Amino acid sequence: MADMTDFRRVSDDVRNWGRWGEGDELGTLNFITTEKVQQAAGLVKHGKVFPLGVDFGSSGPQGAFHFRQNPLHVMTIDGGDASTLAEYGPSWLKNPAATQLSEYWTSGPMRFNDDVIIMPLQAATQWDALSHVYYEDKLYNGFPADSVTSLGAYHCGIDKVDVKGITSRGVLLDIVRLRGVQTFCELGDPITPAELDEAARRQGVAVERGDIVLVRTGWWARFLETGNGAEPGAGLDWTCASWLHDHEVAAVAADNLMVENPMPGVDGVFLPMHMLCLRDMGLMLGEYWDLNALATDCAADGVYEFQLIAPPLRVTGGVGSPVNPIAIK
Image (cartoon, rainbow, N blue to C red; front, side, top):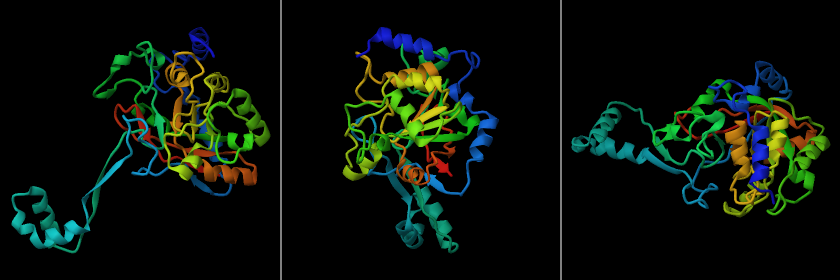
């Protein structure tokens, strides 16, 4: 078990503060150059599209953390309203909404449905913004932690990354296949930097500067079997932060609930890799990505690189965002 001395040594080594200027709020997304985007587009050979997002609904993975719940989807206008308001609307004149809708529906054949969704921005497939995790009162690049208020993140919000897309070359590292396990990597055996290297070697793919690395742990496949969002599984060991830094990747995502291993490898520290990646390195994390179909296809054709398109919503001041990423081969 490492201690805070080990942690601080790594944090000093991976910290990118000032690397792209004092005002930078993009972090490692700066590695995605126009040439990188062109390279990613050139990987599309067959037009095969793989959606990597999961369902946003009541059967989602949230609930184990009581501060996050699954999305609540509510219809505000539906077919029942259409028939009711068309018949009874004129008598509801004291209700402005009913009056307006009845005027629409009694004047012609047009009808419509409308709905609302209420959810945490990190309810399912999502990106962590750089403002999501901090320590010692500092965000990425030294911005003050109190610049994130009840109104949102003034610095390092998810809306700041819209200039990057996000699109780049994606690389899948299939740790389930590497380990030869049936479904997923069970808790107690964190994924090491050596395994990331070995997976890349066996798959015949190199991780390059500006890539977005996708790590398959099998957790999502397990969740689809059990429906148990609270069951932990193995994730990246905290030392993988140094691996990501050394390879100059643009971002990392996984099919589990926190990318990193839920059992911290640093004594007394919860989510040390989040701290190193988001706060020190400026590297965004993607969670709850469905990599099953993509992994099956990569194993079939031996091609583990692809164009990845994964722009977040431009939520002003958001510290995370839903995303429906797409891999194209």
